[in-house]
Image 1 (tube, one colour):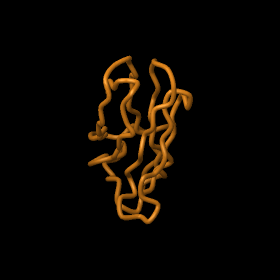
Image 2: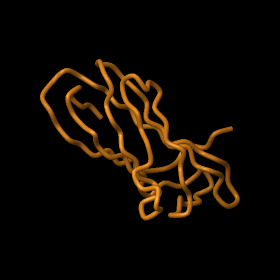
Image 3: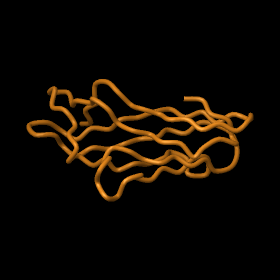
Length: 110
């Protein structure tokens, strides 16, 4: 996802992910959110009350560049933990608000 450096904050959410054994992420599976570069972007759960456990808020820091936004999930029943990764590119530009949704098959970690 590409966003202007003056944008945000925006939301990131997980939808319809499964692990390598086809076990789906459920509403009780709460990820640990992280940013590869907290100078460019920080990410925190947007719903500590639990009504949207896979949601988060991404806030841009200073500068331009790329950061990886990740959501690490616990092992699903009969499976292994996995991590969902999204690429965020911050470029110079006008203000904007955006939403990032990660959807698709999960990635199993060794």
